[in-house]
Amino acid sequence: MDFAYLVTPLLTWVVVGPIKFLINSARQRRWAFNLVGNGGFPSNHSSVVTSMATLIALREGIGHPAFGVAVTLAFIVMIDANSLRQHVGRQAAAINRLARDDAGHTRLRERMGHTLVEIGGGICTGIAMGFLIHALFK
Figure 1 (tube, one colour):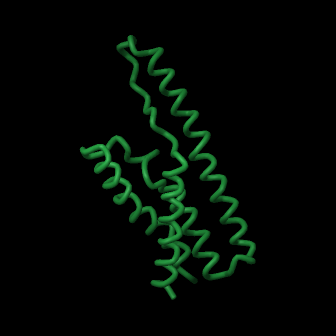
Figure 2: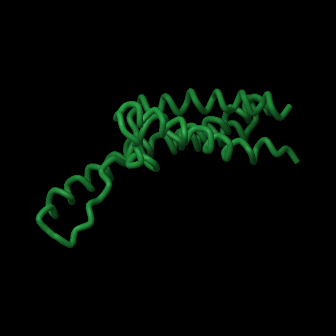
Protein backbone atom coordinates (compact mmCIF):
# COMPACT_ATOMS: atom_id res chain seq x y z
CA MET A 1 0.00 0.00 0.00
CA ASP A 2 1.21 3.47 -0.84
CA PHE A 3 1.04 5.45 2.40
CA ALA A 4 1.72 8.75 0.61
CA TYR A 5 -2.00 9.01 -0.13
CA LEU A 6 -2.81 8.70 3.57
CA VAL A 7 0.02 10.95 4.76
CA THR A 8 -0.56 13.77 2.26
CA PRO A 9 -3.75 15.33 3.70
CA LEU A 10 -2.60 14.91 7.29
CA LEU A 11 0.90 16.28 6.71
CA THR A 12 -0.44 19.17 4.64
CA TRP A 13 -2.91 20.10 7.40
CA VAL A 14 -0.19 19.89 10.07
CA VAL A 15 2.25 22.06 8.05
CA VAL A 16 -0.23 24.67 6.78
CA GLY A 17 -1.93 25.26 10.15
CA PRO A 18 1.10 26.82 11.89
CA ILE A 19 2.03 28.76 8.72
CA LYS A 20 -1.49 30.20 8.63
CA PHE A 21 -1.35 31.04 12.34
CA LEU A 22 2.02 32.83 12.04
CA ILE A 23 1.05 34.80 8.91
CA ASN A 24 -2.24 35.91 10.45
CA SER A 25 -0.51 36.80 13.75
CA ALA A 26 2.05 38.92 11.89
CA ARG A 27 -0.74 40.70 9.99
CA GLN A 28 -2.69 41.49 13.16
CA ARG A 29 0.44 42.24 15.21
CA ARG A 30 -0.84 39.91 17.95
CA TRP A 31 -1.44 36.20 18.37
CA ALA A 32 -4.30 35.38 15.99
CA PHE A 33 -6.04 32.66 17.97
CA ASN A 34 -9.36 34.04 16.74
CA LEU A 35 -8.46 32.93 13.20
CA VAL A 36 -7.66 29.34 14.13
CA GLY A 37 -10.20 27.29 12.23
CA ASN A 38 -12.17 28.90 9.44
CA GLY A 39 -10.83 31.77 7.38
CA GLY A 40 -7.38 33.27 7.08
CA PHE A 41 -4.36 32.91 4.81
CA PRO A 42 -3.70 30.36 3.37
CA SER A 43 -6.82 28.23 3.20
CA ASN A 44 -6.18 24.87 4.92
CA HIS A 45 -9.00 23.18 3.05
CA SER A 46 -7.76 24.39 -0.33
CA SER A 47 -4.24 23.27 0.56
CA VAL A 48 -5.34 19.76 1.53
CA VAL A 49 -7.44 19.06 -1.56
CA THR A 50 -4.86 20.62 -3.88
CA SER A 51 -2.03 18.58 -2.36
CA MET A 52 -3.99 15.38 -3.02
CA ALA A 53 -4.80 16.38 -6.60
CA THR A 54 -1.13 17.25 -7.15
CA LEU A 55 0.07 13.95 -5.72
CA ILE A 56 -2.38 12.00 -7.87
CA ALA A 57 -1.28 13.94 -10.97
CA LEU A 58 2.38 13.22 -10.23
CA ARG A 59 1.87 9.53 -9.38
CA GLU A 60 -0.94 8.47 -11.70
CA GLY A 61 -0.98 11.17 -14.38
CA ILE A 62 -3.58 13.74 -15.27
CA GLY A 63 -5.40 11.23 -17.46
CA HIS A 64 -6.24 8.98 -14.50
CA PRO A 65 -9.86 9.03 -13.28
CA ALA A 66 -8.72 9.64 -9.70
CA PHE A 67 -7.21 12.94 -10.79
CA GLY A 68 -10.56 14.02 -12.23
CA VAL A 69 -12.29 13.13 -8.97
CA ALA A 70 -9.64 15.01 -6.95
CA VAL A 71 -9.95 18.15 -9.11
CA THR A 72 -13.76 18.02 -8.87
CA LEU A 73 -13.56 17.72 -5.09
CA ALA A 74 -11.04 20.58 -4.97
CA PHE A 75 -13.36 22.87 -6.92
CA ILE A 76 -16.32 22.04 -4.67
CA VAL A 77 -14.26 22.76 -1.54
CA MET A 78 -12.91 26.05 -2.92
CA ILE A 79 -16.31 27.28 -4.13
CA ASP A 80 -17.76 26.42 -0.72
CA ALA A 81 -14.92 28.22 1.06
CA ASN A 82 -15.37 31.35 -1.03
CA SER A 83 -19.11 31.73 -1.38
CA LEU A 84 -21.20 29.65 1.00
CA ARG A 85 -19.07 30.21 4.09
CA GLN A 86 -18.85 33.96 3.40
CA HIS A 87 -22.65 34.07 3.26
CA VAL A 88 -22.77 32.24 6.61
CA GLY A 89 -20.42 34.88 8.02
CA ARG A 90 -22.68 37.69 6.77
CA GLN A 91 -25.67 36.01 8.40
CA ALA A 92 -23.72 35.73 11.67
CA ALA A 93 -22.90 39.45 11.49
CA ALA A 94 -26.57 40.30 10.97
CA ILE A 95 -27.63 38.11 13.88
CA ASN A 96 -24.96 39.68 16.10
CA ARG A 97 -26.22 43.17 15.20
CA LEU A 98 -29.84 42.23 15.93
CA ALA A 99 -28.99 40.57 19.23
CA ARG A 100 -26.38 43.03 20.52
CA ASP A 101 -28.67 44.22 23.31
CA ASP A 102 -29.58 40.68 24.40
CA ALA A 103 -27.43 39.79 27.43
CA GLY A 104 -27.91 36.06 26.85
CA HIS A 105 -26.67 36.15 23.23
CA THR A 106 -23.41 34.37 22.55
CA ARG A 107 -21.62 36.29 19.84
CA LEU A 108 -21.35 34.30 16.61
CA ARG A 109 -18.11 34.13 14.68
CA GLU A 110 -18.39 36.39 11.64
CA ARG A 111 -15.15 35.51 9.84
CA MET A 112 -16.00 32.21 8.17
CA GLY A 113 -15.07 32.12 4.51
CA HIS A 114 -11.96 32.73 2.44
CA THR A 115 -11.10 35.43 -0.04
CA LEU A 116 -9.77 34.47 -3.47
CA VAL A 117 -6.26 35.45 -2.32
CA GLU A 118 -6.50 33.10 0.67
CA ILE A 119 -7.72 30.30 -1.59
CA GLY A 120 -4.92 31.07 -4.06
CA GLY A 121 -2.40 30.83 -1.23
CA GLY A 122 -3.90 27.48 -0.29
CA ILE A 123 -3.61 26.25 -3.87
CA CYS A 124 0.06 27.26 -4.06
CA THR A 125 0.82 25.70 -0.68
CA GLY A 126 -1.03 22.52 -1.62
CA ILE A 127 0.86 22.16 -4.90
CA ALA A 128 4.15 22.64 -3.05
CA MET A 129 3.17 20.04 -0.44
CA GLY A 130 2.12 17.59 -3.17
CA PHE A 131 5.52 17.92 -4.85
CA LEU A 132 7.33 17.63 -1.51
CA ILE A 133 5.47 14.51 -0.43
CA HIS A 134 5.92 12.96 -3.89
CA ALA A 135 9.67 13.53 -3.60
CA LEU A 136 9.83 12.17 -0.04
CA PHE A 137 7.81 9.00 -0.67
CA LYS A 138 9.26 7.83 -4.02
